[in-house]
Image (cartoon, rainbow, N blue to C red; front, side):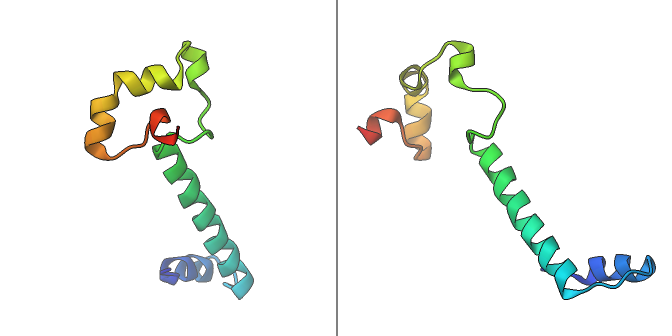
Length: 80
């Protein structure tokens, strides 16, 4: 992690950039990255789901089967 910009901001603000501050930033950034990646992948963290659109996983799998196959995505049938 490049802390140079964080250190500079803290120094310009008259604040001390401690190991505790750095650890908290690293932890936050790791959690934020995981959350952004999960949202990109259609994780359950999203505020909507298939049921809201009266769809089942099987319907989505069937409709997008070729798309998923060419891109290596798993389907419900793959898990059965």
